[in-house]
Length: 149
Image (cartoon, rainbow, N blue to C red; front, side, top):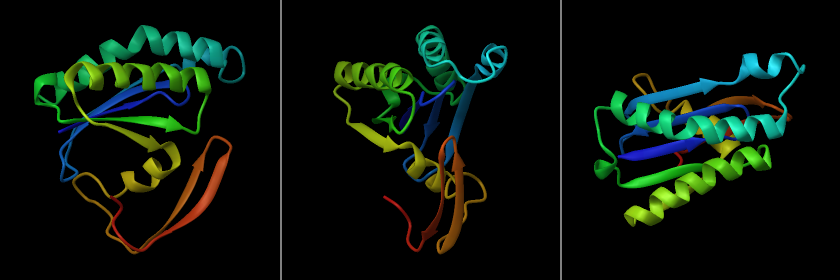
C-alpha cells in the first residue's frame, strides 16, 4: 500500500491507496475558512497549519484505511508546484517517515496527480481521454493516451 501526502496549498491531505489503485482512504483538512478573512491563502499561515494538522491527518487516513504504518510499502508526496513553505512541510514529513522505515519515497508532480487521479477509484477513466486541469495558476489540457506509471 502507498501512503500519499499532499500539502501544496491550504489543504492538508493524506490517502492510502493500494498498488492497483484502490482508494482505501482520503482525508482532507481544509483551511479555507481560516484564509477567507484574508481574501486568499496566506502562505505562512498555511505552512504553520500544515505543521499542526499533518500528523493527525495521516493517522486518520491510516485508521480509515483500516491499516497501520507497518503495512505501508511506499510513501508518495507532492513535490510541486505549490507554496514552497507548505510543500516543505509535506516533503519533510514524508521523507522522515520513509527514512525511518526504510521505504521508497515517490515525489509526485501536483498537476500530474490531478490528471492521474481520474484513473483511480471505483469508476476509473480509461485512456485515451482529454483532461482539463485548472489548479491555482495552472490551467492546461492534457491528452492521455496510455496509463501512467
